[in-house]
Length: 342
Image (cartoon, rainbow, N blue to C red; front, side, top):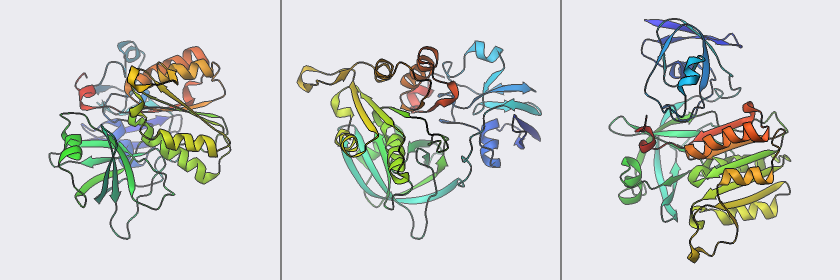
């Protein structure tokens, strides 16, 4: 059995299989609904059900409140239609320009950038290329059917191996493997490109890039892409970590700040120890933006990192700094521990 999904205001429509989510069917059909994690944790795919009924698969309460449900909102990555449905959602132009593919890849390098961060280099098969937008991610296809998502950390214009930044989560199915038994020349399989976290090139607004931890990975790709475009849009990069070692490419960001005329870099540390001898900004990284740029009404914000940081930035910037809600673009990095709270 199939149901018809109609998207307003575009008027696009597509078929959704029974027990398939609205988002999964949209991706399969080439319809550009916004999304991030695909598992009910980040809220990027939130839209409104205008006609018809859906039921929700498990999701994080913070991604969709009971009040929002009463108002007709749904997480399209968890929404399963029970008949024909009309939704109201802002489609993302360009998100379906590149086909989602399953590909093998060979590990060509595993470099420790910090005690708990590995930079993985991946080589695609000869004569194969992955077309993607800076900021998108891939999902590794593991043997037990599980998936693990990681952002591509270099811009599409880069001709070398794909670069991923992987933080070690002790007990993590994939990250334990990366940090203990993975070797160069190992073969992995992934699916991509995925996600709608990428630069809106049609805008000329100044940009705030907000990252925590390895949320820096897609932000790095965005900066490299803007360099490739020779963009003159002002960029303010705020990168937060608990301790200075969490800013594992701090020197690169300082180099950008020296060499790029429209670029500013603000590192922020929340839990520095005396031995760190940290003399820079302290506190929460999203709050540092509010202190420096109290009026965000003319900006775009691209935020990537821990869900609590992304959620706080979204709500505070819109409510207190005048940021238009539609100019906040996010990719929340969710872990299996996060999902267990669903």
